[in-house]
Length: 479
Image (cartoon, one colour):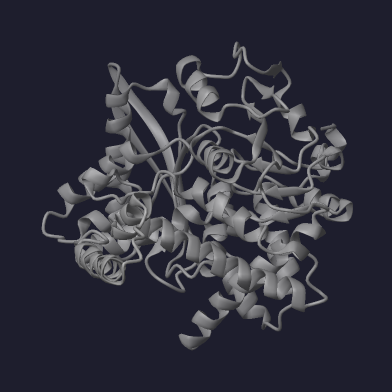
């Protein structure tokens, strides 16, 4: 991107505000209520010292609370050297609209620690995380009924388990202390399917989009996901699971994978598991032999494909490259990967964008299920699974009896019996709930997109649905 383009390019925070403004311009809100919804309620900056390597190191962290129209507020904690005040406020705002869109009963929040986790050993990261947790929890910025974090870029199950344990140590009589954070390992109060949730949600979002031929036609495509060429930018947790499920279960071809040290291209379809294993062993894609390697990784964003999945960081599609994007459909698995300026260019080109507000909501949806599980103190499926299996067994036994008594002589196939008789466990129930959530949210968006002539795309439709639900909540409170 040239210097002139950089000067014209809105930042992440400005992009979120611009997209918010596009939506509220189509709504009949009083200026006061519009401002109340737009601004962040509070952003806390904490600076704390940790004794490491024979000295004291000082770290800076943030927790932003965007909207408390519903509580607790919800949003991940990211560990990255680029974390800053504006970034967490923009992400917190997105969380507010995202939770409203998928009808998760949370306000929006976000947090971050300005740190490169690759620079520290595991025991050092634990010390840092526990102290960060202490600083947030003593201000009620981690609390089961007020503020519930989750994993984000640079964090995962391990860090969430440390946070939960530290909160429990500080609140020894809180019976619901496990609900203070989501994204924990299943053996530490987490839920099956949380690690895959955001990537699985991307898959469900695409499946729902392809159920509507008229929507597919708007993206100058036809048919189903089978055989569609997909380029994935970022093979981290989200990108990996999205690519894995789309290739293995929907027949899509992952023709490009973009990483920090380069990109891989193979029009026949890359082996996602093999590439993921290579990255885990070598720290990047360089040296992978079974595909074409491209050193300039970001140039592959412009590679010809049907679907582009930016699944890493914000602002990767901008004024400098938007005109050269050759995808028919972009689904934003990351937060804010398309800037407001690029969004205008892509819309004029006829590229359909499934917005981050909806596309990556799988994580918060399954976090909601985990939070409910922690508050109810029982895993999903425990009460009804065997009863469900017994009821199905009655049907199978009766069918087989009728076959014997009538002399027909047919039998049910073992595969059918095994699948029909198996009651739903926690993972199946989580996936079912996530699928239903993604379908329902998409239908709400597309109804606005198709029924209103003044709504140009799915992004504006998503903001309209989300903001309208926030408005309804505030009005119910008397504002």
